[in-house]
Length: 104
Image 1 (cartoon, rainbow, N blue to C red):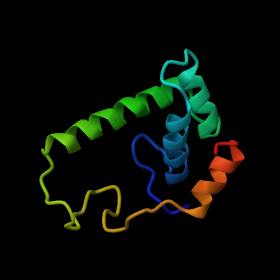
Image 2 (image 1 turned 135 degrees about the vertical axis):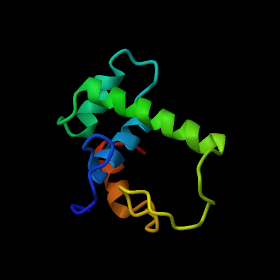
Image 3 (image 1 turned 30 degrees about the horizontal axis):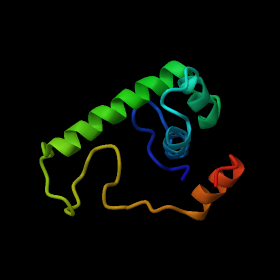
Image 4 (image 1 turned 120 degrees about the horizontal axis):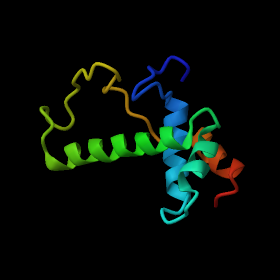
């Protein structure tokens, strides 16, 4: 995935995947949530970076859920930064990340 375009403020595909996994396992109420997520992303992002990335994710979800997208679901549309025609499924690599974090 090294050729995956860096989108959303310079986040690689791998960093985004680690970010998503970290959000799934770190308690929302934990006072050190953003520091823990940053550490799980690989230590190259600050707590402020991951919190901003989370806000962007929430904003994207609001747009998607509002139905304000200008294309129909299932139609391949160029989105400028990501090849929308290539779906990503859960992989063995994703599973190995969970094992690495001792998440069962």
